[in-house]
Length: 199
Image 1: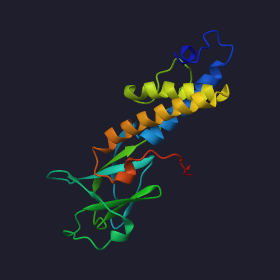
Image 2: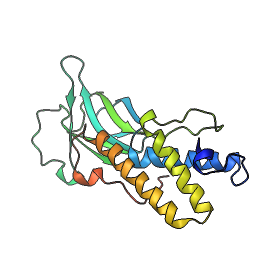
Image 3: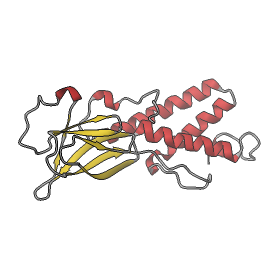
Image 4: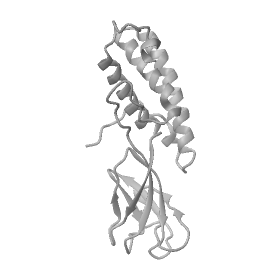
């Protein structure tokens, strides 16, 4: 499909490897900027330790799962609010992300269980015929990203910019539709232009 969109049906302009590389880069870009690859991780807190290691792009929300009773969503705070919010005993009430971990307030007294709602990266395709590792509703934007990259290679910069602008608007709609489910600030809904790699 991408080959038809870039008018290269016979494969003279772009090799299969180039198109696959562009599509895999697009998947990663969509997963990071659009936050559309959602995952729920069941994690346990170590007693008397505030931090819980999480492997993800970003953490969207945390749900406390008590042994008995109903689940409770924790309130997202900033690190400067630790110790300044009202608490009820040792029951987890607040959380904040920091580095590759999330931190719970008050400090868990026992091994509590949490459902951590996260955005994760996509799985790269090995062949151009593989199913993309992003949700179906994001696949049209993957094709737009591929067209953008092909236009860059052809040095058609005005067309590439136009396609990229359409792509970014679509990512913003995807990101907004996902983040609206969680109580986040307006700044969290902006599509970042640059992403810093974590190591």
